Length: 287
Image (cartoon, rainbow, N blue to C red; front, side, top):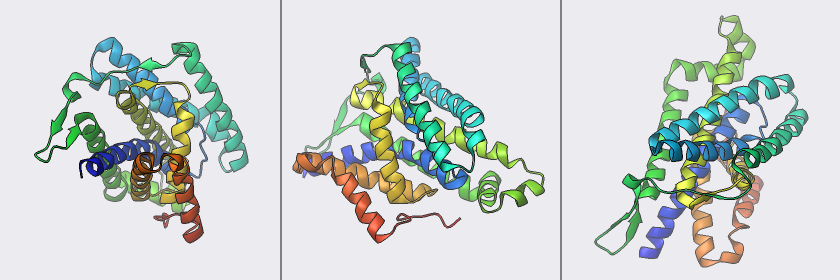
């Protein structure tokens, strides 16, 4: 039983990290119709910038703020100077954002060097709890799960219960009509892009203490998982991204323990199965 509980906690923590990366990707594509292959680079930049700020200030919270700001600023620059000129053209979006992904990944090596950087868990999140059954629960993993749940609830309330969320959803359905009402839908979409980028950077920052090291290629590795999650969950669906990320996290955790040879393939198999049954994803947004 203790093995099952530990694998479940590990899978949920990994799933929440993937969720933070994937939900921004899903919103940007589902709501703005932008294929952003540079999203993984924002994840890596958030990790490096956040860990650097954390090391300089010795404050994990300030490190998180640094990662969020880095993601938001990079998202603003990316949307304004790279993505805006290619709105409505998916081929150009893929090519130009793939190029940005490569450039940003190489810039990481220029700024912080090519080697891995070790990260430490903040003191107040170090250690673990032992349950009466003998199961050991690591504090930092529960922290990641809690952050992921808070982000999920916050995004759900933002999109479903606020005026801004109503404008975003209306803009997706009829952009011209929203603009005719005097609302600058371009600025609203820019905010969505910056929000998604900041969440990706937050995920990268939280991954550092979780894995113990960060490296320049982490954006590629987690970016692929994020795309799998978006396909399984459905474009533009926060709930779909959360469900699919948890599914991918749990399947990866259990398969790595019981069937290590299939741990890399299981997520691809999941995606193929979902595409066969429901090509638009399990929770495809209705618009």
